[in-house]
Structures are given as C-alpha cells and as structure tokens.
Length: 108
Image (tube, rainbow, N blue to C red; front, side):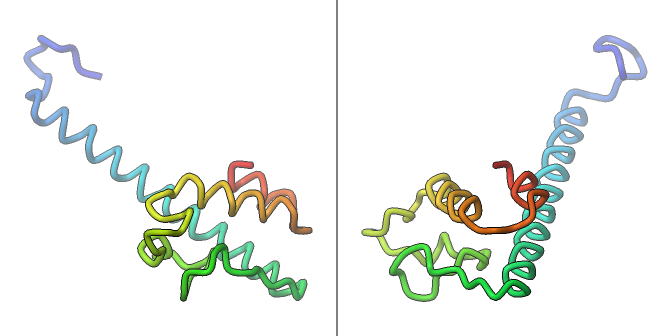
C-alpha cells in the first residue's frame, strides 16, 4: 500500500479509479457466480423432473430469466422490488429437494 503523502503514491483520482475498478470486478464476479448457481439449480431440477411455476402472473417471467425485473407490470408485487423477488426465489428453493451446496451458495 502507498502512504498518503509519499512521493510514490498515485494521485487521488487514480486511487479512486482503482477502487472503482475493483468494485466493478467484484460486481461482475458476483453476477457470474449467481448466473452459474442458477444454471446449476435449473439443471438439477430438470434431472429430478421438477418444474418451477412462474413467480407471478406477469407474462414471460421466469425465475431463471436474467431480465425478469424489467418484465414485471406496475401492479405486480415484484415491480421495482428485486429484494422481494430474491426472497421469493430463496423461499421457493428452500422448499425444493435440491442439493445443500446450491442452497448455501445462494445465500440461504
């Protein structure tokens, strides 16, 4: 690490850019991980012959579709409510007979 007033320390703007780059990298890694876990869960459910119902009555919405937040209608309980959507997904997964590793990796 650099010291703040050290002659070798990068300018403040560069430090902020480095922090922002690390944040973006962590966010991207988290997205990839979540996508992989959902794919693994979907494959396991398919092997077991379990189908998951739609989370709501909005047309075209699936728990495994990454763009579902944009498809909810304004009278849907999941409209602009990603935390509620995630909570419903976790509750659904807990009720299914899936491997413990997948459930733990989803943050349950």
